Image (cartoon, rainbow, N blue to C red; front, side, top):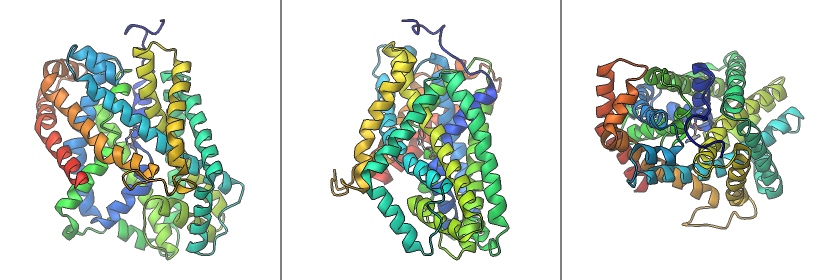
Length: 449
Ligand code: TRP
């Protein structure tokens, strides 16, 4: 009962701590294994311009909307809608977010588990002796096919999330974000230094950045919008939850701008760390697991001190995954402490265990349950499809409509605290009212077709 009421609620210790935690949520696997490939394949600098426009038109407005809902209510996503417009069905938007969060966490921790396994194997020198792409692929297939091992690392990663989140907002999430995010940045710089000094690395830069405006089509614009939305962790209430721990003096506009800038910078730098090395080794560009668990281990195998570089890379990837996963867990924990009045430690363990169990079928999707399908998809692919393509866009639209129409007066009052730019507010209001719902609606429809 000690957690009841808004007064005893924790707050961030500093603005930079909050920004690093929010950036930690945004910076995840999407920045490292997806953005660089999409950038290179979809027009280089030309794509970058489109992407920046999407961040400005959709990303920033929706992120601000989430933060303003969070700070205005001082609650978790379900409680937030209930406090701001009591007696209306808007709380369902928060409930959808909560559900989405559990499902994302379930499969995100599976991939994070693979990453931990590769980190362990890199550090102990078990991988990085591949001669061919086939050998690297076989090693990956063998590993993900070993369901016992995959579930073990899935479990281990879940325990890491529990350790951080059970320590609270300031003492856990903020403290670890302040350690992990600079570490991630440093590791990235080290890998960039190595990648760029390899002979033939220029090809990789050309792949990434060479402007090709002929690639920009309606489809590519939708791709950029979807990537911006996913990369900023929008649509399920992470930023509502993190915003609920904000004090009233913090300027919401400048905070969201900084988070988006950090997210994009790391995504671009990840490309600079990865593709010059991939091209220097004569390999082809790819994305997803094929890039991180097959092509890169082969690259590291061919380099002097490859085991060290490989360890750095998988440490970086583990950090990126961890700071995203804890934000997902915190959404559920804030719900349990606010609404169910559980103490934090209990909430953390029960919520993490729920996501872990839900994740087990996803962990088995590459092994013993590879033939078990729902709607023709393995559990892993089902979770991914359902959340990224359907639930997150629905959540995003609801959040934008809520902030722009249903709760507009309150949003204005809340947003003007810590900021005085009336014009900026107007621009924001019309983007969340019209532009963002239409754009995210278009993403949703194209995903469904
Ligand atoms: N932004 C994360 C990434 O780039 C993925 C993600 C999407 C996410 N939605 C989220 C992470 C919600 C945490 C919470 O990989």
